Length: 383
Image (tube, rainbow, N blue to C red; front, top):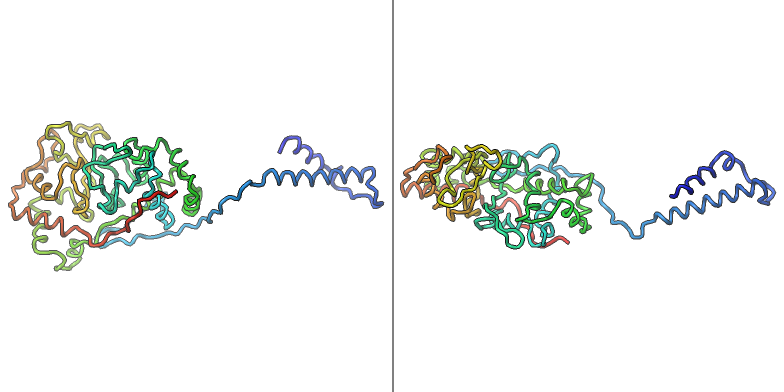
């Protein structure tokens, strides 16, 4: 409303103009005529204002915010899944996060989604040595599976972020992954889709924000779990859950092989950093954790990955340089590649052929879940 319009209404509603009735003669003369004119003008202005502010097109109806708290059905062998107080798990967030996870529109050229690298058909990894982003740009590290990331206190191989919420936007904004130029560009893509507007409104009181994109993706990823493997049933008392070879392999895993020092149950990782010599065989090694801490002792150290669903997540190591589980066992058996920061635990194991076979059997049989914990998604766009 213009200033003049506001002043007119204030004056029209002054005591002199609003609290006296019209004359009873039927003739609008004198003050009665003035009052009639003022009343008519007020009505006309009110109607004009209503016309000016009437939307030209109908806005989409958004659902009322009504979050539905949920608890994840945790497979045998895993602890309860906890969410941070700032991002309690709800059904609406998980559904929205899944949609975002499989949406290629969230990459610069609309060719990549989170699922392009974290493919449920490939163990929530990509089956390649390293990640491939927009325009086929190759990264330098193997794609870690997202199985059981809900149990990790840090994310990425080098542990550079401390929550799934902080991790979620990294690949979307990384110039060699999904390559979106900014958070604003991500939100612009989302606002192009009316379905997203409704889904965000249902999941969050404040609707579409970049933080809510991260919260939704994190909520979905917390539901991707792997447990109830033969090892878990064996530990629960089922003596028939694993073969004799796998049982012998478990004993080697816990004792002679010393695997359990870094790959601790229940998720078969200590979520800590170790230099096992990968990459120190002639080429320039990846600095690993050192790039985060700048501590010389961390040079070439990487977070221990989970060993669950190992058969689905090849190739192995932070650079994807080892193709098979058998080759991984051989690598550890020789004690890794020498370097100044090599872990003190990396020493030749002197495993026999039979012991290697049994250890592989445990890793393959004992830690493989029989059912996928989450349904595979679509790879189409959502617009």
